[in-house]
Length: 612
Image (cartoon, one colour):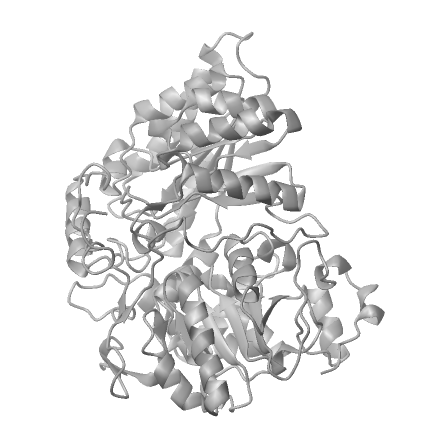
């Protein structure tokens, strides 16, 4: 297979380093007849994809396999895509610079619903038919995985294989099966039927969906015998034994997260009722301090980075956090290695720890109260009080911080005007706390940033039956807050309501939406998560052409007995638990943290056994 020459077009595009490959710690293999080729595709530009930890893990894991070569593929920026189409250059792997249409597997990670059009555009650019039913024996198998795969139905018609849950073990089992088939004589349909028996693998073409007259799903069932009617997610039971790369690729150009990312644990025990990640990544599994310390040492040595970010859903919930961070500071502070702690919780905000970190490198502080009133925080089970926020910000300001970000959601179930006014009240109180601290003690240049996003009811959350508020309502709430938050030192940012509507449609949709995505591809929709490329009117035209009302998916309240598009997937939390939690939400009742009291979500029935 010939290597594609791109030198002649690189001088015409912005940031040519995106397309070069050959970075430090990238992997190159000798390719022969028996090499299994795997394209790991990230449906966004290089800078975004290279910041994604899952890609680094799976890239190195798959390349550890003998006779398997995994290469990276990113969505080319608009200027590069134009040049590629003009010169008939198909999408290629970064390492070999060979067309991915000749590979065995083309895998995409589903991190964000608004990247779906990019996936189709990348397949089109690769000269691979977008629908799975149109692909022949010699086309690559298209695999999808990642958090959005928990409702893969809107994009199911384009996938040969969907991986549910944590992919490390599944990918290897799938590759082993493929190797066996290659030896014995590969037949695509037979391979897919066999793959469907692996836990965590969903083959959409092997299942049939029927609908009632009103558009609601009537039935979902397997077309063939011997495959499960409900597909169960995969989890890694022991994170200390799970694969984690000891060297990661260091990009040529600045990327979104340019540092060593250390995953300290998976899962979350808090049970926020709007949070999909907190439900689908259960149960909590921690890495030991010893394992993390070894990984930190090896990753810093192999990359030359000067910052470590501790990755998890709620970093301050890690049981060994104090010991681990102090160990890092003692070992690396002379080398000026900074430590960043995303996802801190206000109620266990450790000032001493933050002060230690700040000695090396100062970072901004971000807190997420989520709602403006205690009543609404109880509805969403946030488990935080106003006192927690006031104490945390006071401690931060006393320690010299002067920049604080506060995240909220608007349009949460049961929200009232009073709850919105509460957002303004909290922000004003934070400003007042800063001014109450003696000048010589506090930092200069106060900036409180208030950010709001529109609530999206996601699958596998207690709010999955709730509607999203309509656009007019969102605009009215944003205008009200803009008006009320006019004060020196306060900046108000809000997320575009129109992209939130589209995200809700594809998060909650069914297979009928594949038609919408196919038309959107024809109309040139791509990079929909980027404000400068997103065209809402064009999307509304696409829905009209497809004869589909977006409100049916986004802003319709669903009944408990309705068959939901994702009901054939077992994410470990039971429907009974989610219904119970929704009922408690309506009454404003709290559910305790799983670490103190089991909430009976069902994850320990058949997934790990016993107490989480």
